[in-house]
Length: 306
Image 1 (cartoon, rainbow, N blue to C red):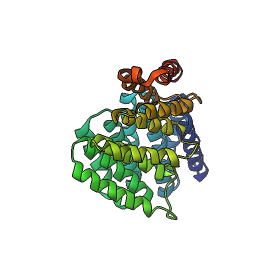
Image 2 (image 1 turned 45 degrees about the vertical axis):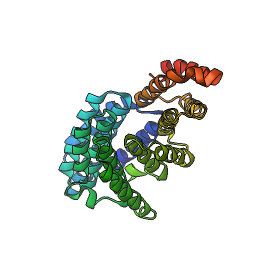
Image 3 (image 1 turned 135 degrees about the vertical axis):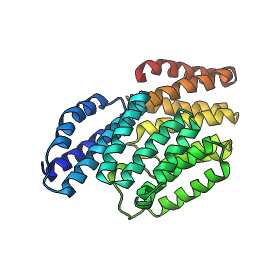
Image 4 (image 1 turned 90 degrees about the vertical axis):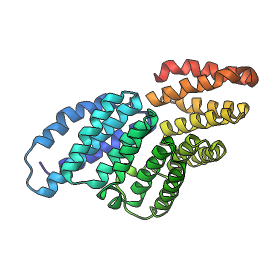
């Protein structure tokens, strides 16, 4: 086993991550699972010549297992996702890779937030910041850890602490330009921070500020991140309905459906469309023909993304 094998694992991570970001966790997930149970398992079991090679191998394997967990989470297979996160965390710990361990705990915290488990989300998010995990992380990764912590705090009703965490995350991201960071956080940009900030503000009941942040995320989102862009638009439309802006919500949801129709396969996006129809139902009569058309499109798309 050589450094070339480690590079091959990193290349695989980059490839499968791109597919997940563009088309959702159900795209390529079975291929990644097969790769883990064959090639990756064999490499982790092989003898290595140096301690550095061993730690690099374990870290690369941990990232791939984490990604399989993230894709399972995005697919709605939550128990499988948790098992993958647990395994990835053990590999990262064996490698002595604190920032990677923090990244994995952050993903598990994100899952707990989405499942509305505030105590568990806060426990995991605080774990992602503990020990060397936050301190040794690059600024971009610190910003990601911090904003998910803010979301957990918001869900737990700790509004003051959540706003402070959002401020720290914004400061961390401001320091990220020009600083080295692992490839796994390349997606975390101004648009991603705005999305997570908006979700935290929404959960704190500040709908006006949440709408502004969701809009900022939509304006600044790069094209490769279609899955998250669809989620952002779905959340924005839901906030607009809650604020009484039915026409704006219909326009936003039409944008979301355009993105989803590009071929996204994601359980989270499926849930967004289901919630879109639920939020839409009480206001269909106020939205007129446009609202009816959006609802019809959403119903048709459910069979494609489910």
